[in-house]
Amino acid sequence: MQSTWRGSHRWISRLDRYLVRHVSDLPGGNHDAFFRRLSASANHGKLWIAAAAAMAAFPGRPRRAALHGLIAQAVASAVTNVVFKTLLPRARPLPEHLPVFRFVHPQPTSSSMPSGHSASAVAFAVGAGLVQPVIGAALAPVAAGVAYSRVHTGAHWPSDVFFGSALGACAALLTRTWWPVRPPFPDVARTWTTAPELPGGRGLSIVVNTLGGSFTEETATALQGVFPDAHINSVHHPDQDLLREIRHAAEHPGTRALGVWGGDGTVGAAAAAAVEHSLPLLVLPGGTLNHFARDAGTGSLKEAVAAASKGDAALADVGIVTVERGLAGSPERAQLTMLNTSSVGLYPNFVRRREQLQPALGKPLAGVVAMFRTFAAGTPSTLTIDGRRHKVWIAYVGRGRYYPRDHAPLFRPVMDDGVLDVRMITADESFARLRLLWSVLTGTVATSRITHLSEATRVRIDAGGSPMALAVDGEALAGVRSVEYTVRRRAFAYYSPQQR
Image (cartoon, rainbow, N blue to C red; front, side, top):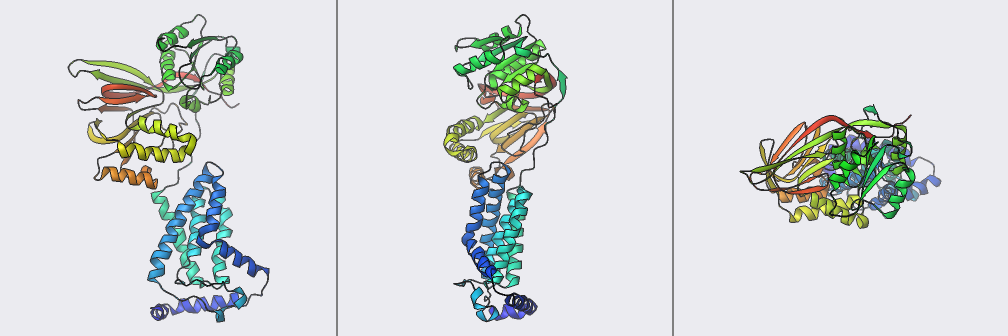
């Protein structure tokens, strides 16, 4: 087989020997020891694992670059060592081709074609560079050094290195099809409007839901300290009517703006009151995850105070959720205001499990484990969505376009884009549960056929006579037969700090 390979590629062998001869003619020196050590450091991918660990210490793009680099390296290493080294057996250079003092010891016994070290090096550098080009540029000379070291130490012929490098680059590019790089989030954009300036909270009525979110005794003191002139109404007992307290706050004499401290459900109720009374809304960071406050730019009390004091405000859409409950012959209809998201199916269970696991595992790993547990035990719901019947694990509707554009919405840079962000994970396909669990294990839920992303201005979901569990801004509703979502464009103003 070896003689056949050489007979078919004599010109490659001649070029290899010509290049190795020139490497052999290089004078000896400290660089010989350097390339031996560099080559050895890349054995079994140790160099790239260490680089990935260093990159993972920095959250965001460096951490994602490390993950993508390791995925590309793993694919390149498997293809090179399992497939091509079997298909293309070739002898490695002999001591007669290079000075003995440069030869790697012990010399590998596997096929010389192609170079696994080169494939792994280029795959990691290109894979990381596709996520973070600056990191890729920094890794490029290291990868090139590893690739050249395989020729300098007599471990490979130059054509082995070239072919291995090409395989590594291809592996990095191909893995982007399966594990695509998330595009950068668009810039935050606001439609600014005028709102009353509230120095010291003068003219501000605040409703504080002490039963939810992150309220503590220090919260009341902090609010009174930064808004000494505000009217603050606290809800302390479960039997208190939250909606009534919000209405009383909005109708308090002298009120020019409504403030709210609480979870997503409390904020949604306050938004409805703000729209009804034509008041701007100041969302304080009091919820468990502060979804709207984060998107509005008031994720800290300092930012909220700055926006209210200067009268910085913008316009936002609101989602109108019309639900139908009760008996089919005599349904009861109710209309809710949605500021953030609504979901049907297993999503509430997934969120609950993820939040339980997050302190111990961190958010990314907690999300994977929670999703695996939720969908391994759960069953899909049969729903009719905009006239089409689906078996659905999760149906999710967001008020506004969320990013990233995959199955895990996190951030909303524009608050008045006029759209509903519709995301579904379906069980319509054969082997639905296996497909789902495989995509969870491999991290490919976003690119799987079970994931469907779309946008609309109106969405209707019908349970087909069977009641479904619905969550709107974190508040659960049972026994819902159908639900319809619409958007009211720029329906209310909210305080948001403006860069000056």
